[in-house]
Length: 70
Image 1 (cartoon, rainbow, N blue to C red):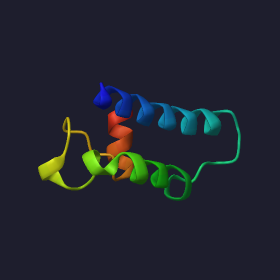
Image 2: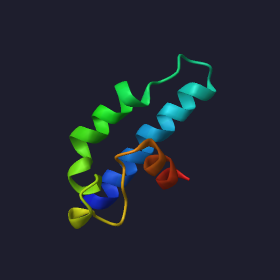
Image 3: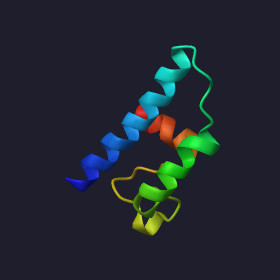
């Protein structure tokens, strides 16, 4: 249940970022706006610590996040 909520939350943040960019809004800074949210809420289970990685999902780099969303 928690895993699904975390993945859904991450996807929601990612989709919001892409939707704003597609709508012509000011670009969202991954490093300044998205990364702090992920760091606070997701990195304990989905960061660079491979021993504690949950579900094989890493979110600590933009590339990892984008590959999860695709």
